[in-house]
Image (tube, rainbow, N blue to C red; front, side):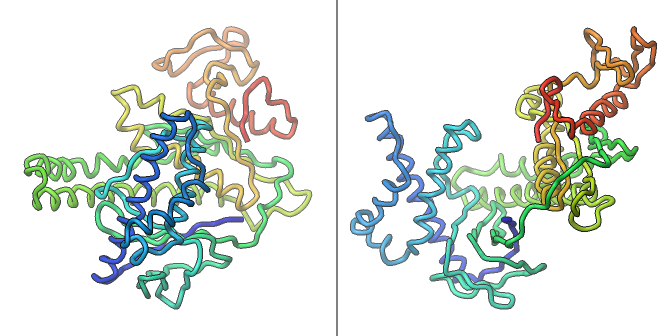
Amino acid sequence: MYQAYKYRIYPTLEQQLALAKSFGFCRWFWNYSLSLCHETYKDTGKSLSRAAIQKMLPTLKKEHEWLRTDTYSQYLQVVALNLSTAYKNFFERRAKLPKFKSKKGRQSISYSQNVIFKDDYIKLPKIGLVYCRLHRNFVGEIKTLTISKNRDGKYFASVLVDNGKDISQKLTVGKVIEIDLGITHFCLTSEGYKYVNPKHIAKHAINLKRKQQKLARKQKGSNNRNKARIKVAKVQGKIVRYRDDFLHKLSCKIVNENHRGAVPKNVSATCITVENLVVKNMVKNHNLAKEISDCGWGMFTTMLSYKADRVGKIYIEVDRFFPSCKTCNVCLNQVGSLPLDVRKWTCENCQTTHDHDINAAINVKNVGEAFPKGSFADIGVRN
């Protein structure tokens, strides 16, 4: 099973200059290859493959001496792999069309081999020993190492390793936990726990506004504007770190509840059910776009999914078209329409009065309990 670890690194000034050159080489080769892919597609109706992009490197090294003497060939090979993967994701409708890279955005290079960890240092080809803050150890074979620089000037190393473990076996459903995502409360569980939305952007709104106003007053292309841009990036980076920390801790808490190691044979596993939300459609509501984006629901569900797989729990996404709010959890009768401002309603069939959120939570929980029966065609479930 693959697992990623991210560490903060502190390169020296000389190493920062060497990394800046490496970032520039990879960025140049990406933009050159992407431009050539666009031209090829216009002329022939087909794009370039990964092998065709990699075959251009010997010719380019003859034309540009700096590409032959100052670069490390492995991370240029990874650029071709990443570009072909980006096009594959685009054609399979998992991502947008690849874009040209700018030196003002996030910079990164990837190594596929010849990377060595020595105590608190990472030995990189043509860079040397770079100090790394190893706050936790990892076990497994290193697949790739990505060195990145954020917009606020911080450097990180992301290590992808194969730990040799298989995903824990998931057998039958035992305890079911339903999670209902929201804005006022970030999430509500079927066990009665409510987690308040931290609203990270609102906490730093005043500071961010001041920094952005100062940036807007600077002359474009000046050094002062670049300094102001970095200050804005630092505030935005702090918001991102606070959000990631909150989501990681909450997802770990939910997944690790009542968990004691891997699931043994013939023992029921905990099932986590979440409603599948299409955030990109929800943010079209301009009144709630900022609040919805600040929550990070998509990232949270992704964390729940891979962390549940890691410990052998079952993760289920209930389709967004499943009428969890409009269905009576007692007699399964559905009402024709139910506006969002109606928080309580009475079933016409069994005369049961329901709370909007509690009724939805019970229905989603019932979907999780029905998981072993395998009859998902009528309710829409994704595993």
